[in-house]
Length: 255
Image (cartoon, rainbow, N blue to C red; front, side, top):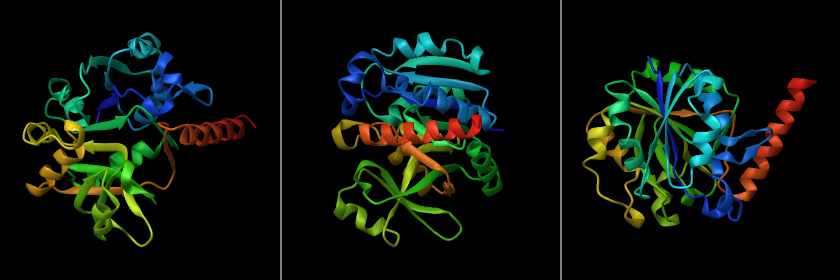
């Protein structure tokens, strides 16, 4: 059973300045609710009960807003990543929280709809007996993302984080790339792999590199192609699009 999640919310949100000089990007509203609340609603819809949120400096607003999680029907815990050492390092802070269970990792600046997608991802993960299930969506510029190679059975045969155009070319599928969409289910094997990877660009430990090491060591990693809508709200353009979509969704529900 997948009952635990780690949410990554330690990023500085530099592309959303000056807003993020005042509040964390995860507290920026998408529709009527902060982005982080949409993230937690997605997790809850998939049966998640316990959530560890990795925060950085100046993230007290997240702690104040979410508290214990009781209001949302979840148990929420917090841990601080004191230096920006990368996504793999952030996940490693939850080793003792996760134990031996499979668990969800979700980025705190993700807006995904419909919420019940999470249940479908959990079911897919179980069906494939996967050691890692990466939620994917097509993109036309791979340079901001992790992208993958995948076969007809959805098994992943390689991945790369934030490639150059040249590095990305072997991963191209027709006219697009399959982007790792900031949502995944991993086995606890990932923690031993994180300890053995080398720092990547900017000296950070990338979660993609740890997952790739796990794959190379014979663990089946699969891709779930997401058919809903997804935005990371890390830029003003994607924030506007997510906000518009959420307002339309709420208006439809209320009509």
